[in-house]
Length: 326
Image 1: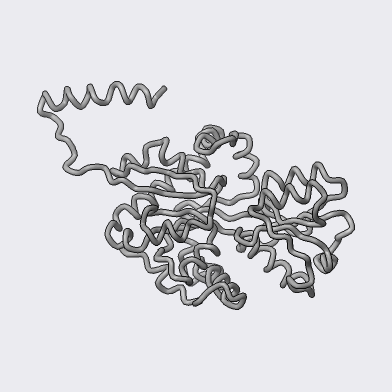
Image 2: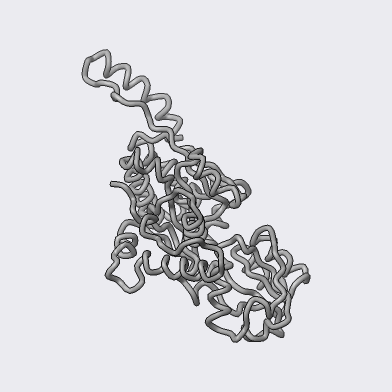
């Protein structure tokens, strides 16, 4: 109702002010900006920013596009048809390292239990995965989480496990629940559904055990950032305001966040948030402090080194990735 009243009353108020000579129209048109991300709660505070008018206040006409096919992201950023992209940090690093012209803007959230490795009852350790079938999406950020856990907590390599490639993480969870595989890397809500519906199912590890492996971040097209640094700053501030609003008004925030996605409820959002940590302005300032042991640059360098060793990065030099124009 508040939005409808504003649509009715604001034009009248502007007209009256102009006639009275007490108000002048802005000397610039709103900046059209496009942001893309997939259906995931970690990005959803952007809907709060849009609904609360934080983008409008900065003169930004924000178009948020839900694009589920993450394989298209690099092309969209190269073309410049999307100016801002939200996705996991390690895919962002791989895109940058392989030539996509993007710059890091801010950290959005971290998975702290929302992702996990779920197995049948007979698999009690990571070493027990030897010879077993495991469903996963190697394009998802949880793949880095899995490989990190495998390297850290077992004597196995990928070759010791029969990996069943899935088109997405949801499909991996469904494959496990239908009995097609012995284990799967999945996220919420499939993770909880699998534990509830499959007798003996349990988690070997979750992202709570490796909280720095699944981080979501916002990146921007390099040329756009150079041309419009003030827009980049405004988008950052809109995100920070949205996170503050979410923390102060959780129920209302969940409704707003769910409204931007199809077939997602406020209850779904609230459930996902139990396994997430959102990063506002203060958290980003801490992450940006290169003097801290686990700064965003240190975490990201670990990712770049890992993926270069796996042959998926052409370079592990992230200097320019963090060189955002001011």
